[in-house]
Length: 359
Image (cartoon, rainbow, N blue to C red; front, side, top):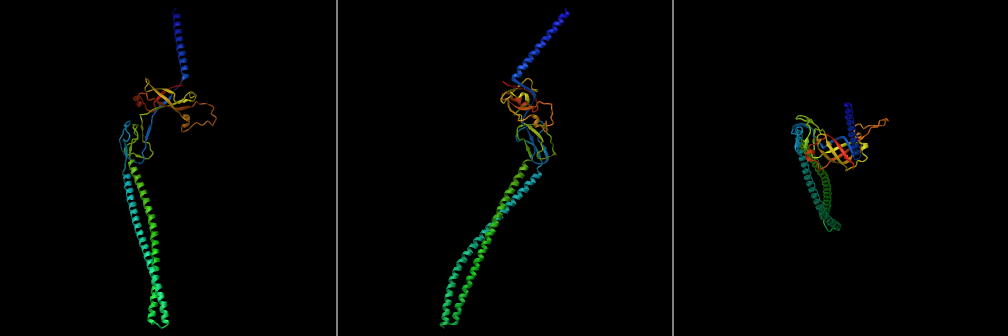
C-alpha cells in the first residue's frame, strides 16, 4: 500500500514536470515566433578622449578619478614658458615687418617726388628749347644778312664776327638744353624703375606682415592650448597623468563620458535578422537593474559583421569547412519615456538582454 502511494506521488511529480516543461516549451516557441532575443549586448555612450594639442610638461591636474565636469572646465595645464617666448618672438617679427612696410612706403613717396621733379624739368627744358630754337633761327638769319653786308663792305668785320658769335652761341645753347632734356628724361625713367622696385618691396613687406601675423596667431593659439579644458559635460574616467609628466600631441590621456545619452549595441546571429527591421520596439533588461525594463527602438544595422571590423578579420581562403554563425551589431536607441535617472546611471560596457518585438 505504501509502495502504491509512492508510485502515485512520483507519477504526479513527473507528470507535473512534463506539463511544466511542455508549457515552457510551447511558450518559448510561441514567443520565438514574434520575438528575437540575445544576451550578447552592451550599453554604449559617447566617450570623448582628452588629447593635448601641444607638447610639454604637465604643471597641474585639476580633476580626480570619476569627477563630474562642465564644458569649459580646466582639466590640466601644460608648462607655457616656451610658448610665451614664441609669442614674444612672433610679436617682435610682426613689429619689424610693419617697420619695413613704413620704410617702403617712404621710399615710394621719394620716388614719386623724383618723378614729379623730372617731369617738371622735362617740361621746362621743352619750353627753353623752343625759345632757343627761335633765338637760333633769328641769329642764323642775322648771320646770313650780316654775311652779305660784309661781302658788300657795308659793315665792319667786327659787326660780322658779332653776328657769327651770336649764331654759334644760340646753337650751343640749343644743344645744352637738348642734353638737359635727355638727362631729365633719363632721370625720370630711373625714378620710375626705382618706384616699381619700391612697389614690389612694399608688396613683399605687406606679405611679410601677413606672414608674421599668422605666426603670431599660431603662437597665441598654441599658448591657449597649454590649458586643456573639457569639451563636453560629463564624467571623467581614471586619470592617467600627474604633474611633471611629459605629454605629446595626439596622446590620449583619459576620457569624458557623456551621461546624457546612451544606447545599446546588440550582436544578433545572422539567422535572427530575417524579420528584424528599423523601428521595431525592444525590451531591454540591464543586469545591474533586473527589476526595471528599459524601452528601446532599433535605429540601424551595421554594414558588416563584427568580425569584419576586427584588427585581424577572418579569411576563409584556406577552405575552412567549419561554418561559424556570424553576428551583426544592431544599434538600439533608448526611448524618451525611460526614467532619466536610471538612464544617467547606465555605464558603457554594462551587459544587457534585449528582446525585439517582431510584431
